[in-house]
Structures are given as structure tokens and as C-alpha cells.
Image (cartoon, rainbow, N blue to C red; front, side, top):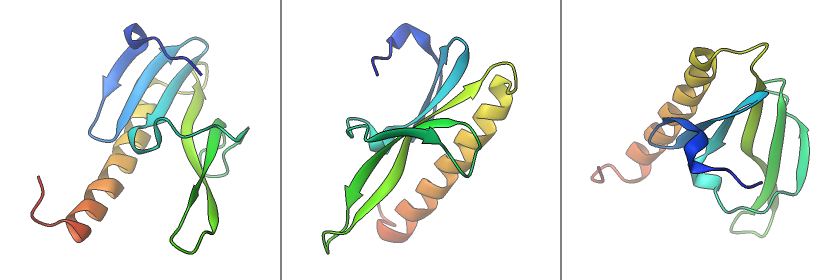
Length: 103
């Protein structure tokens, strides 16, 4: 999916939110560049999403969300931002546990 930088409406430490009518698109910065393997309804958010595959040290593949498509008719920018900030908070906590000296 090609995203026009002019569509960017919000930026966080670990996310971007784009205005792509008829959706707000929340993109996980840590998954940028990951190949989209499927386009499905996300179980957590209940909206369409692009998912990719990452592999752990044992070679086991894990499906992960790359971006989520929130219909503007059902979600406001504030609601999408809340979800993005939750994701951002999780990543910051992980970074603090794994790299406490980095900032």
C-alpha cells in the first residue's frame, strides 16, 4: 500500500495515523516495510487490517498487524489516537525493560 506523506495527520514514537478516506489508517512504525501477507479483520480492534509475518529465533512465524483501517463513519481521530497511544505505551514499556539506558 502506497501512503502519501501528505495524508499524515498524527505521528507518535511508534505509530503514524493517516487520513485515507473513507478510513483513518493507523500504521505500526516497527512493522514498516514488512511484506503484507493478508488483509483480514483484526480480532482486537474489529476493523480491517494488513498483516505480515515475523519469525522468532526458532524460525517460528508469527502473524503481526502492520496497519489498521478504522472507518471514519465509526471512529473519530481521537478514538484512533487513543488506540495508537496504547500501542506506543506498550512499545515504550518493552524498550524500558530491554534497553533501560536508551532514550
